[in-house]
Length: 326
Length: 291
Image (cartoon, rainbow over all chains, first blue to last red; front, top):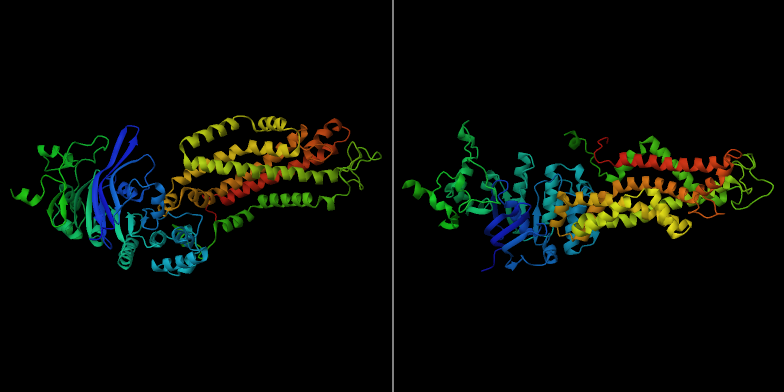
């Protein structure tokens, strides 16, 4: 069997802070195959962005990493920075949250897309620029040749995110990490950008890790979902299954917090309490302090256990329906 | 946001926009014209000067300005106009060369400190702080005296004295740039650290450096004049505005033109560079919305 494009096994990320070490990611595992979209969902601070930066090798020096990150079966952790640097932009690419500030103000859109090609494919400036214009056309930028000569301040937010996507995909990476790619955009533009990502993924077979806190986005664009809470994966399942049969109380809470169009004007459900301080995490299940079903046994850490086909939840109560029936 | 609708569709580069804004700044354009005039005077001095700046004449000592000698003659009977024209060479050369050297030294060091951080930054910053804690002219005089009296040594002394300003500016700007989203995106694209610094960060910090460099040229011209005045710069009999002032001080009441013309030249050039610097600052200010 061919190895998956990305395989993350027991990833831990620890930052040194003034008030002691902070384990932002604690034993996260997942895999993504070619042409597959994995959505990583969770609140701010749950470790989803840190996980993506760890995969890219972009965490600041001094960060302690553990576990394994394998790209096409090849281990990346522990490799010298140089090897990683050569892969960034070529095999691994990333789109950031803020299209307004993620482009260098001193260069034209075309120059920035061409840079990836010059860095990794050794193209001459002229040839790289021609390819860059092609890429801009592929991300559906009208009049790509003219737009390529414009500077970021002359482009709208949606347009800039398209340029970012063109930069990321210029060298046909095997893995694309999209860190909340549409959070900063208008809702109508959001839909266009996500549809574009889907389309390009189908064309190129790139594996996509979509970091988001928007469950609506997950439902429409992800094949699989990993729900993260306080640095750990709470639940992972195919997208349909997750929405139909969530098995972790946190997932249930998240789904309850999504406004439904037919739901009327009632109060949105919210999850009581706040995210734990990761310098002093609660023992055992990290969601226990906020969980309506928590009991004594939750003081031991629940394993991420299989509850169905491709469906696992880290909860002693899972599957929930069995417990509720009892 | 009106900015998105008012965006011109033709690609106007930041540099072209800055030029357009600069040209609207009247005083700055005036300053630029004055500078160009002095540069022309310095370059074409042999053609423009009515006499040899070194030729003495016993029959024309300390003559007041006249048709034959527009700016009068000095204590050795030399033509003051010719000496002011040739003196522009020393002053402009000293101003421009010393600031260029200061840029060449200060900017790479500052970039390195700002991007690398850690110990490199600590050591570089402390050295720069130590140099900045000594008044500009005092340090320049000390260095020039140590190196020995000569125009080249004065230029080197001024360059060394001016460099910590650029170290500090480049360091601060680089640290700011390092934390931006676009720097992160450039890293994600596989840029090695040196390329991040030279290709991505450097172009973004050019505007403030340019403004600072222009103002530093004005300062360097004054410093050169001061060093020459003290006998540490241009050596006699070669003309320099500073050394002309030095010679003139003995005759201030009897022959004020000896001091007035080189003094006026220094004043005009320094004013011009400052006006241009101010104009550049306004033209390059990213926060300014005036088209």
